[in-house]
Image 1 (cartoon, rainbow, N blue to C red):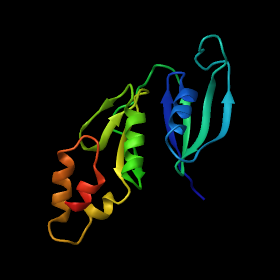
Image 2 (cartoon, rainbow, N blue to C red):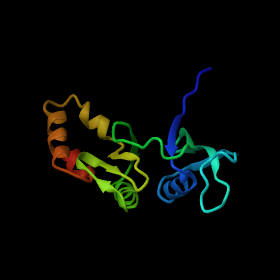
Image 3 (tube, rainbow, N blue to C red):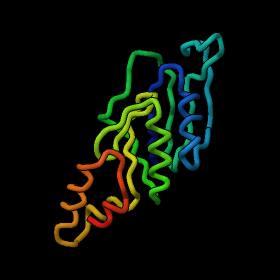
Image 4 (tube, helix red, strand yellow):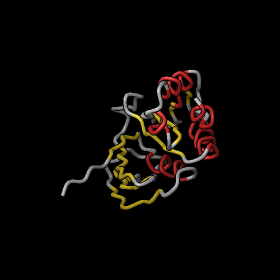
Length: 154
């Protein structure tokens, strides 16, 4: 059986990032941690090379690979939120010390791009109602942080 996981390359701060995400995202669980002396040192302490974890039902591996690579918005994590309160909380937390962008996108303090989206967004976009998907897209294009009520009513 095949299984996939997402590997995120960090510059020695994978533990900090996972801890930060667990403050706002439901169901963050560390599965395993692998330590090696070749991982980039952090203030004289041993840093894990890899951390396998689950976040909101998705498998990830955080790799403390050093400064060779950085994240880009070309790949983002889409966080589907059931309520506007969840959108607001995730947005406020993840955008702190980061950068916000149009259409519900942000880059967090670790450089990871996120899309903070209402869970029903695809339902609205794929609606059979004439013009609904165009109205939702037009409304979304006017937003930075997404407003679920406005999108639903579009």
